[in-house]
Image (cartoon, one colour):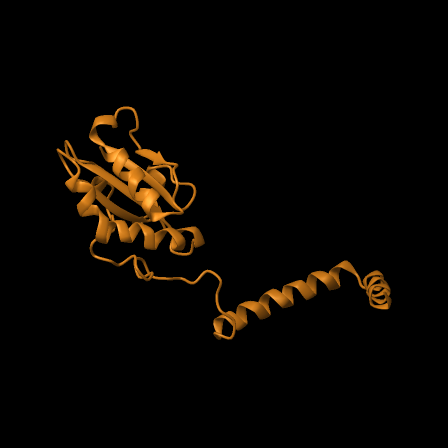
Length: 176
């Protein structure tokens, strides 16, 4: 282990101020590389609602908290997300599949009212996320007029989100 011994001797010789200076130089160099597009930015500043898939017209983006107030028999299921979140990127295709292909079937099984699925970009709509107590992404919430007194900020869905069929069945069951 001659390298380790050499490294230990080197560390003993340098002062803490030199280490701090090296760290500062490394950080500055990293940001210069990001600014010149040599290194990919780990948290890109993506404009609101331009993340691939989230602009889909069949699953509307919420821009005002009043859009989360259901009519008498309506149920609104909302995905609160951040475009940089890896878990959101995994759930997005499943949620959009339900919006695009399965929502009609869910609504056909209902005898009254309809189910609406919506998206809230908590980066672009920070105030809405704060209003509903969103602290992690993604968060699915169900809004029903019938349980508004018990759950004024919506009922958080805690079921399976890994399998689109299970997610669809759970959302259908909740909506009945």
